[in-house]
Length: 518
Image 1 (cartoon, helix red, strand yellow):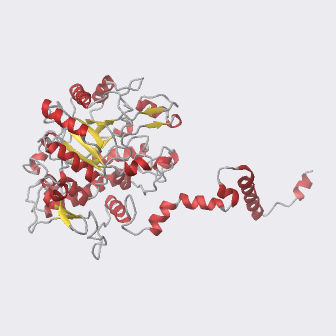
Image 2 (cartoon, helix red, strand yellow):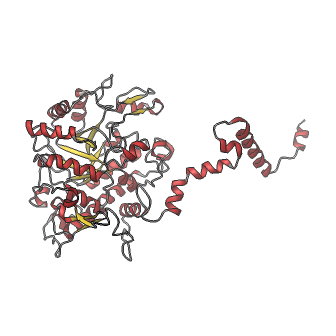
Image 3 (cartoon, one colour):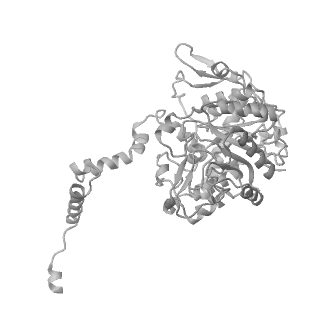
């Protein structure tokens, strides 16, 4: 028998290929019923789905021009990558932008720029730009906080991002003296590597959640007591990706580690409702803000994407009447962000950042309340010129999310919602996460922040100012339309921002609340 079997010649290598193709064809024609293309065109039909799957990569590398692609074009991504790697991020032979395009930003430079005097903090620290306002000072919180950087990491949860990505970002913000917003997934061990933390929670109350899914003040107090890295607390009312929409975290994704961090059960689906249980109207929201601030001593703010203004006006009226309210407001853009969302929400629900922020700021400006609030902008503002525009409109800090992801290696594959992120950033795959060199990537995030702030400050000085808080609405112009080509922000949006009290960068550096230090 053995001799007989040994006498049978083994099939050539190509026969195995034909056998595989034959089996795929049998599967396509007779077994699978879901795809008409595969049934009608067995084997070759798979090519269509493969090409579709790599479409974004093919377009961004071979089809789209330098300024064409969305959400971030090749020039924008290239600037972030080069800045993070401390490479040459200049461009030669002039701008390739259409300078007459709609909404193009022009920053007005001064005939004689601001000259940094000897002994000035920026003479030795050209990337030092702390926030000009202090969170919680107006409301007499026990632990006011002046962010040490005007650019910081926006809300992105552990769970949405990988452990390695969160750790790299936290170590990076420590090096850059910035803060790191946790996102609504709770405070994980990967957030605890020395960076200042803004603890953020939404309708799921992850990390401060009771068994029945409500908010727990006791857990909040303990969390703050056990983690002095938490410098402020943010309540999410809505986010730009999907304002007014809840979500479901499938039980299959809830590992023991995630369950412990978020305060949920292993393997059981968790619902994040569209609305909060801890409050149902504006008065109750203000009461919750005041209670959390009283129990923790920390500044408390809110985050929202802007649409209808009636409840924001109610909030402002109550603040004017009672003297209570949020210490900071984060305004998210309706363009969407790192959060997965249906296209109907990402494309159409809530206003883009520029329209949303200008509408909201006017609500508080009309009541002389802007000096009480630290305004934070979040929505594709991670570039110096856009930051100038935001500060001219009234922003005091900006948060960056996707730009921070790109600084540590994101390639805009646009598969964040599939758990198959090829760079290991937006996935829980242990194999893919291994590609993230945490020390290297933390350096790159810090370098992106430093380069950003250096260029931002250089533009500020070119405009004749010492600090970005001094920008006014008349310092920036935008292209409007063919008949009214170019107008200032003040003319375009119909207001002038409130002048921010500022007595020099040295005063900010000497502030006892800088970076949360008491």
